Amino acid sequence: MRTTGFTLGAAAVIAAGALILSGCSTTTGGGTATPASGSPIKVAALSGLTFFPEAPQAVKAVFDDYNKAGGFHGQPLEYTVFDDKTDPAVSATAAKDALGSGAVALVGSSSLLDCAVNHKTWEDNNIVSLQGTGVDPFCFTTPNIAPANDGPYFDTYATLYDGSETLGYKNMCAEVVPDNPAGQAAYQGAIDAWSKKTGKKLVYSDFSLVRGQASYAGNVAALKAHNCGAVVITEVGAAVTAFIGEAANQGLKIPFLVLTSCYSDQFASGISYAGDIHLPAEFSPYSDPKDKSNTDWAAVMDAHNVPKTSFAQGGYLAAKYFISILGTIKGKVTRSSFTAAAKAMKTPISNPMVGTPWLFGPGSSHQANKSAWPVEIKANTNTWNSLGPWLKGDSIGWVDTKKP
Image (cartoon, rainbow, N blue to C red):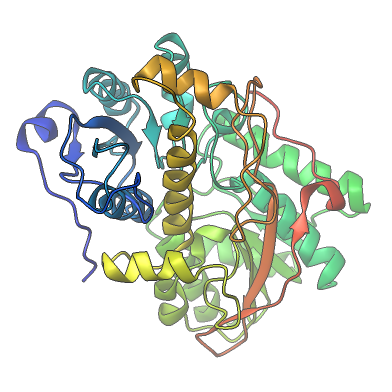
């Protein structure tokens, strides 16, 4: 059983499906050895906790350590996470509650629809969101949101590029969960950009998948009928395991190319498949014991019982980026002062966990992280292997996601 570290706030659950994270912090304090006890600086997140529990858990772990080490000049960070339940109406209500909480910023938000539903709300209320896991196209195309991760559209492009250009797969097919018209257009844009760059085309693409559908038998049968040489799938976590399980039931052994949402110990241990599985990790490969870039992250996750996943990496980095910006503020920390500090950023923040430095800055869109590190699970095994090197957007021809 996973330990989430969440404490339920009953009133908030009734109001907007909110989960209150009492306490909060990170690994580098504000200069004292005494735990922070001053007036709290309030921070919020809006997440679909059914799909992305680890990102806010990782933020909380970082904030807890930060508070124990002194916080921001003695002020602790008070972190509240609102669960949007992957429902547009709940998400809009949760956004109002997040604003009403007095939060100076949103940190570690991870949702299938938060950006699409609430990006205008964040702009209208002069608050910025440092997303742990940006998903829908608006996460990467609006002025007040800057994700720590690559997002599924760069991920799809990098997966296709790695499959055709590095691994040499032919007759590639795609199984896509569009979520909504904007998401479908963004996925199609990534596929079209790959085709333009490489001169190659998919032999079959299926945009009919629905999140967590009951059966994938028909989808797999269609793949067999099109003689696919490798399959790209954009589903998340357990649903990918179910899809590949159905592929195994129907006798397939062809490679699957999955997105970084599957990069977890749980996915690897739960998979049973006679073909190779490839993935472009959005952050450095924590499963590689020779890679030391995740040492601090792993120690913090272990200390706070947070499962090791790519979502936890994104939440950790979002928290670190928040604290870095916080340190540039002179005077009182308010929503206005933090937003101004984020948009005034000129120097990107480098971290060995990512292939490209991260920047918020004044732009009308934000996709600082555009690099991925290839990893794989060999056929009939349950272990991630690091392949590398970084697939960097500028080098492989990536064009940023367009605004819907």
